[in-house]
Length: 301
Image (cartoon, rainbow, N blue to C red; front, side, top):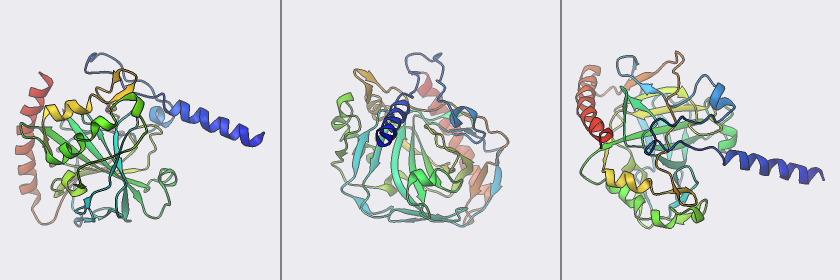
């Protein structure tokens, strides 16, 4: 009987976890973000946040090191989990180290958010890719989520362009096999090979701060690395993700969490040592000015 009670509790927990979701802001911009409960509502180091160039501390670290990110992945699996599109099944460990990280982190999964969750200087981008890493000293993500150094997430923002993004296209080509509600949580093989490097632009400048997962349980165990360099993506490509169903005949038009309070956390803008801070910030400023125009254009469509 005790065993059956434990099973029942687990099933109830899984059912509760599956009930959280997002407002359909594409169709109703006034719809409120739901409360997810627990640490998601009460935590003090929640993510995402707005990242300000002027308000950030300026820092220099050694270069980030990527191992096996350039390896072509020919057996990737894709799943529609009802909240995003998630990729996994990497042929070898993809390891991130260096920078301000004190351990080696291995990629667990990659998923997407359409619109972006983080904003830079109040600009929200049409797509954000999260490459989720686990600290190698912990055996799994559940354990890692209990420690402040347990998880590192590399966030990549995508700006509006007329030129399709080839790496994103490789993912989109296989969406039909998972997009319907009947296919939720049923993995499918990605037909095109893909190197994770193709999803990562230049890492010479980035924001880093201590935060949380942006989905329940919202564990405050994440070192965020959000790149200031962005990749292009077309609106047509982003709209294909919006066809993913989370319920029968209900499409996931957006899956970003609302911005959280910074709560006086240190946000560091890291500038690699190879280039001077002045050069980096000048380039970043010009890039953000250009992208502001693109982002405003997108909001007006």
